[in-house]
Structure formats: C-alpha cells, structure tokens
Length: 329
Image (cartoon, rainbow, N blue to C red; front, side, top):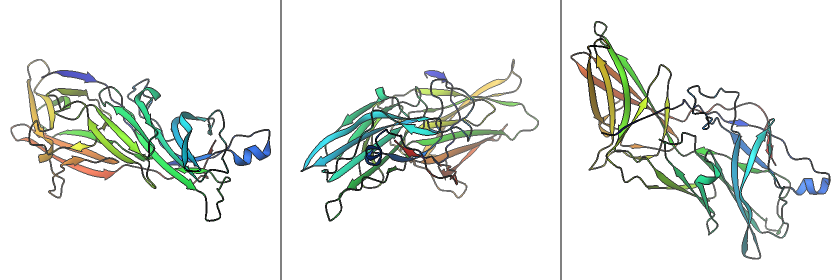
C-alpha cells in the first residue's frame, strides 16, 4: 500500500450577492458596458493549504469568464478566460467589453476555483471549457455558471442589465468523523483515507440554457493506491471527484487506521470498509458521490465489538445573504 499523507482544510460555502460597476469617463460607454452579477461562495486559500476554514466574512476572490457573440450567424470570442477579481467588495476586469448592438446572441460560461493553467477552452458549439482536477494536489470548491442573452422579437438586444451568473458546486464534499465507544479502552485514530478512487479527472463544462453540463473523465485509471489523509481535532472536508462507488472490480474503500492501547505498546489496526456497503441511518446504500452534495461518514469503534459506520447525505450548505447584489464589471 502506498501511503501519502496530505494536509486538507475545511471548506465552507455560502452564497453572497455583491454589487458594483466600473465607472467610465464616458456615460454612454458605461451604460453599454458588459457587467456581471454573480453569487459569491467561500473558497479555501489553496496557496496556504491551511487547517483553518475560511470565515463567513471571506468571499470568492475571483472567477474566469468565457463568452461569445453571434453576429449575422458568425460566432466570435468576447471573453477568453479573463479573470474577474473581487477588489474591495467590487468586481473588476480589464479591459472593459461593450455590448454589440448588431449581435443576435451572447453566451457566457463562468468557472471559479482552479487556476488558469488547469483550464482549456473550446469555442466550438456549445461553448465549453475543460478543467483538470486532482483532489490530492488541489483542494478547492470547483464551481461553474452559464448565461445567454438573445435579441427580442424586434431585433433589439438588452444592453442595460447585468449578466447573471449563478455558480453551482460540481464537486462532492466528504467528511469522516470517528467516535470511540469503548470508555474503558484507549482507542486512538491514526489516519483515514480512501483506496481505488478516481484521483484525477477532467471535467468538461458545456454551456446550456440553465446549469452547465458537466462530463467527467477518469484520468487515474483507479490505480490500487491509497492516499491517507492526516486527521486532526477539527472537521475536515475533502473536495472529491463525483464518481460511482459500486464498481465490480477495485471497489472504492474507506481505510481506517487506529491504535488500541497505549502509544508505546498498543496494537495498530487497519480496516478497509467498502464504500458502497455503507448505508444511511435509514438503511439506504450510497452507491455514488454526486456533485453538489456533502457526505459525512460517522464511524464508531468499540473494542472487541468491531466498527460500525453510517453516512449522512445533505445538500451543499449555502447561506443566503440579505444584501443587494454587486454588479460585476
């Protein structure tokens, strides 16, 4: 078994709408500038990989936007992965783009989380972008959003209202909690981890009229390795690739390593648990990790009585804010 210990951070998420638009010297230009309205969510600081989760006051710092316009049946690029930054509670990008009144349609695709080097763009129809994600190397909340605008029946294009990008989560959040049910016996959790999972994948986000379509491709070929994640006394969320847990070969496993007894003389026990066999409190098996959902595995260890485990599934936590929206510009 190959063991690689990595540090992970807790990731929280809340929706927050902020507003503001770039001020230009020419009022007419300002009115026709392309602005965005986007929901903000919490992202971890991937550069530090710190233990501490981001607080509720911290917001998404940036996202990348891709966009095309159609004029007389011909599509052309308007945004090519430009970074939109949240600076002093105001979204900014440069140089400013302006609506083309001769265009019959605009399409936009926003991606938040990865760096530019992890994204490749496809301007074919539909507008698409591909992201490479490896949870053992990068832990961030991968989100995407899309929007389109077409001219009305009179051939007029709305150039006064912002583009609304509603970001949604496209990873699965997994958490493991361990409880010692043996009050008379010292049991210490050493490590937990996963085996036979998809550990590297590409996801192709394609424009649609509402939520981007996501197609995942496994790049890891589910090698027979284990990444053991260092645990601590704080809740830790793993941002995992959505995937099937009920495979016929190389079944995905949750690995538990713990010590029974004192540190110097205790016995070290390592137990594999097939993920697809773990049930909810209602007795339902979880056979896949779905995008935008959280999975909490509660493990109870009793000396001489083995291990019991169940999983709680919830939608990704979001906290709506009662503040007006910030217009991205």
